[in-house]
Amino acid sequence: MDRLSGLTAFVRTADLGSFVAAGRVLGLSASAVGKAVTTLERELGVRLLQRSTRSIRLTEEGRLFHERCRRILDDLDDAEASLADAVATPRGRLRVSVPIVSYHLLLPVLPEFVRRYPEIELDLDFNDRIVDLIDEEVDVAIRSGVLPDSRLMTRALRPFQLLLCAAPSYLREHGRPECPRDLEGHHAVRFRFPNSRKLQEWPITLPPEGKEPRLKTVLNCNNMEALGGAVLSGLGIGCLPDFLARHHLRDGRLHTVLDAHLDAPGQFHLLWPSNRHLSPKVRVFVDFLSERLFADRCENVPAIQAAQ
Image (cartoon, rainbow, N blue to C red; front, top):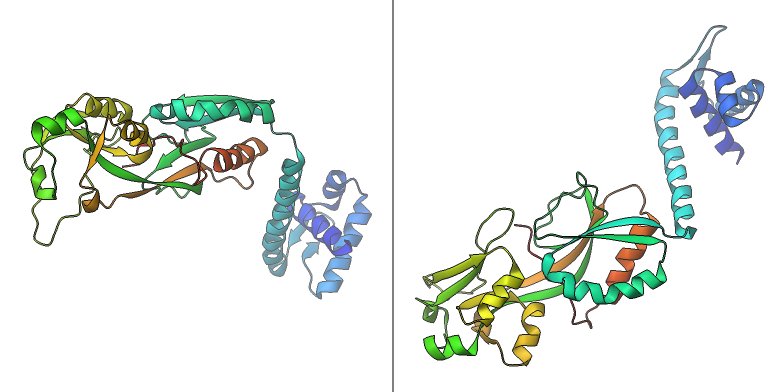
């Protein structure tokens, strides 16, 4: 503790330029601060400060030592803040960005979260575009796909698969494709990414020298739930994530095609800004969703448009 007191006295003196000012901040006398710095210099065997009747300035050795000590004290402050956060009651407004299609999957689990953390106010932004968490001051987002922003912390969640699906009525009229080349001329319902406006590529594995089948796009849209509705109505074949198609596949309203020719693993992520320490409200929300909504055993997983 004596060494820590000496480091603190030295850093405050270097920052403020006098023992008097440092003592005022530390609640000590100027002589006590000066004695602590002198003791530190004696232990290190090097002069850190040049004193005169008018000023105090860092020596070259003191300047190097000050930079390291400043980082040490900042880390200590951060550790203390993290500990305080760990025992604090999570509270305040929590802004969360989620895709539109996830409302019927996310909302059922939120009453449990509200019961656990009654002092958190959830502010949910249902939007299919990829938001900038930093600029738009969003606390947490749910995404999948490429995550290039190094300013964000991430937690990997439930994996998913993309499936090619069609309604029974469409397959009766147009036939069931048995291999990729059978897709030639079939009606396609395509997803268009909201940010780039590019059409989603279907995850078809072609044989060597195989040609990309030419599809007839009859509809494209930037909302995955609307795309699912179009496929259900029999407009054509569409590419849907497994969690969105699951119930319709069970009740026979949709069938999958070309399962053996698809290679489309995906991964969900929670993202939040990379602060020095995680606030209590963000920490409990991330932990809750990881436990409650995105466990491997859970079937109710929100649909997330890939960041493309």
